View (cartoon, helix red, strand yellow):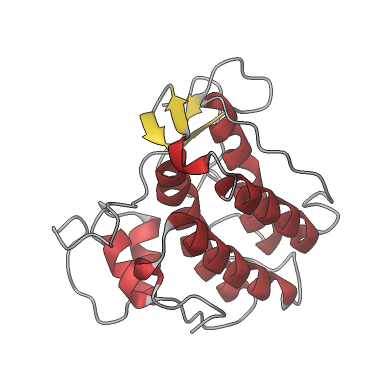
Length: 219
């Protein structure tokens, strides 16, 4: 398995994020060329990091949560930029008030903060670890059990293709009911963010071809 990404369904959200973010960081540390193409059309390897460091702080801000991230930019040092964000997210998840904190979001409603981060962000990092590894010329070895749990909550598209690659031999149709991981359903849902220059959050499309970045007035 890729570093620390084993038996993720048994983890609580803070521990799952730590394991998934560490696995992504390990692939980033081995990246031979940050301008190498990724499996996502029009994305280079650095764009995978740019996607994750771009949409998530805006998502949290729209729900009244600030993520304090300082460090290098993705253009200058993608691995350092990733390290800074993953450390900030882990600190957020391990705050004493995190288990009782509520994210009140205009698009996804009211959710416990730990559930929201796990469902929308940690799952996204997990799936994009596959993209980064392929851009590095590696065959990713990720946790097939959590891939299966996430696959049950999808309805086709690029994410389903990634998860089938992680869980080889799985011929089930996306969306077929299955057992959720312990602790509840931690599955990706439509994401939202705030594009530069936008005054209101803009819903992201499910397409990966537009770099999955929010745009003003997008649906």
